[in-house]
Image 1 (cartoon, rainbow, N blue to C red):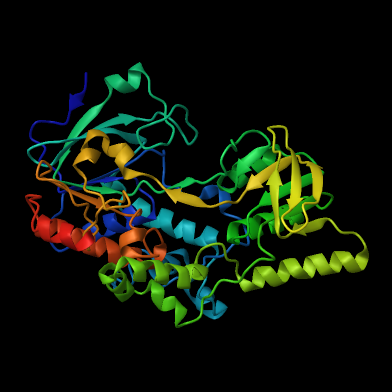
Image 2 (cartoon, one colour; image 1 turned 135 degrees about the horizontal axis):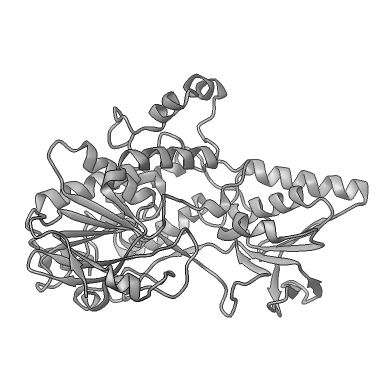
Length: 452
């Protein structure tokens, strides 16, 4: 039997599901807003964490530090990366460094610093297990995860959690006028591939690497930034191991971070993309995919090439990059075949570990929404219809607003799940919520007609 909050507790203005960088930025926007906003965020992890398995020591951010949690929304915010540096005693050192791109570990520390300052808005170790419509908007049921990072059993979000009789007894119901879903990304693996002791997704690299003892062969699949970083990492860490990089391309491709191309990440580009016809949207994504997807920093490409060439000169080659190739016949024991797409030749490998750096896919918000998903309108391709302010178009049975942080690439463009526009996006979502205090749908028919 669920226990509710105290009867006197008011209905929340917004309930945030998930507490990664996107909803962290929203919590800061709530904290900085001029009027009181009743908000609570629910995070299944025991503490804040963002891609911890890939916080490699030398890995840097791919976005400028100015695209932090707040600056593009509020340049005077006390939650900026520069304020973090000042408090950490590194502001002058960072300025002298003359670098726009901090270490990923440093930016994660910045996120943790900011998350601690809005800790009072967050319930860690709390998983939303169901959502249903109510007169006020939504009734949310939460359950304690009772874990410290690793879990078991599948949850409504498609992630894993511990669900037992104790958790059921401790379930809590909360009412909110609006939901903001930021359930993040899920690891993408080729069909038929399952992770195990010798098969990992790169998101778990640092969590698992301690298990490797003097590996002889390591295979990394993928052609993007994470794949190249993993190849360099294994090559450094295990000086006696052969490291195989496998990708279908002819070589690693550099990211286009030129000034004009980067305009695709501008806040104004969201307006352009949202208003554009579907054919233009597809064309824009095709033109500018190389700003973000399957690309590698030029410096890392050059470093890997130097390593390959140096080993050829020394006749001691252990960094082996297999272009125009794919991995086949993979089994749980690490045995696999590297097959050339050009001539069909095959190289059997008995790998100590195979790492798939094959990217991520957005978590499906409909999974969490349960029966409410049937009230969410979709376009001809089965994608959720979303208003410009990131609100899902629903039928009249839903009184509250459902907002998405992620999963809106088809409507809002390439910045849907990226840090580049997070600060601006959360400001737009918060203003939309506060314009609709009773969560009454307005102009649904007009919006539906526009996004059809």
